[in-house]
Length: 446
Image 1 (tube, helix red, strand yellow):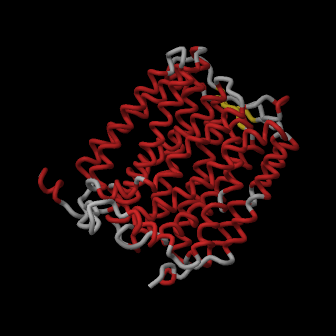
Image 2: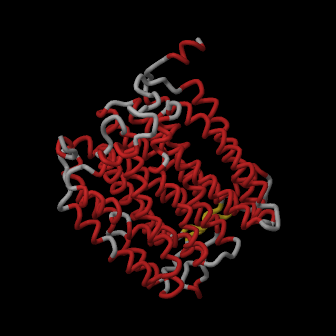
Image 3: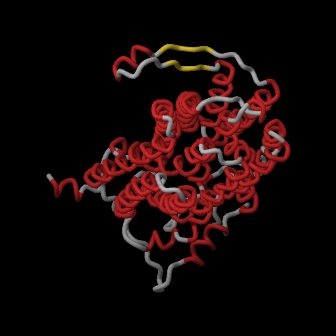
């Protein structure tokens, strides 16, 4: 039985694609989203939070070491090794928050986790390209995004809610964040053992060797940047998510900030439930629907509807920043509290905020699915893993730069103008769509 599992070259993708992309999403969300709520709860300034966008840097630069990943071991072995390393770093992070210099320790560990997570992305995406054929890749694009979003619910919703609940019960928010990182570590340990036995061994998953002993950097970059209409393609990748990048880092501070500071004055639990759980659920539905619509009608027909669904809801955040709707509904969860003998539980719900978040996240699910499918179209040939890493690395630059600026803009101009600027900066990326090549056979030179 063990030999059968070890030597199997193919397996139903439903057994491993969902779990792999759940694993891919957790460290990214912990580094780039949960850290925002954590630092805000520890009274960090928005300028500091915006500047933590440097943590996107490993995802921006991962194409530099993706050829080394291609040339060293199999993608399967890389996946398993990184599962263990990430599990270990999460334990260190949970312990490090208890030290007086926790701010420095956490930034160092988040940086190390970011580099491991970026490499983790390279090998999981590479494994996806080796284990699935083109039709399966198109079909599972929505599925993989869906389980990536489940990771967002887990890491950006459930864990934040847990941290907020522990803060309410103990009065010590650091204990809540430490517990969150310990749980993440345990999840990765479980995933290691599961993937150790379930991942197949694709025939094409082997180290890529150049004709010379050195890594084939020139060949990889020549093939990628030799695509026809590469200028338009690069502009699209860099600009399409620029407006989102301005919004992304400041949404949670906006919800958590006091009303006097222009925020919505919500608590950690409220943000975890509303934005990190219900909102991400809407995003998942959008991602599934997006994958199905692309399979049925093709990306070329759906790219504009998806793009409008993704960017127009940014206007709703302008409305929130201007009007600050305060309608609030309270729901009792005393029945659940009795199970844990912990007194009274009340959940606050803000229907207007919830409607905005669900609309924005649903539209984002559609748009992001279309964007990622286009990046998959650009990954071809022997070095498709490296090519996809280049595309996603450039995409990360398009998020990192506006994210870095977002805290400075908010501090200088306030949330309203930040959200207005985020709407305006979606336009250049949309203009690029008019000039994009959509025929797969013409994306590359002959």
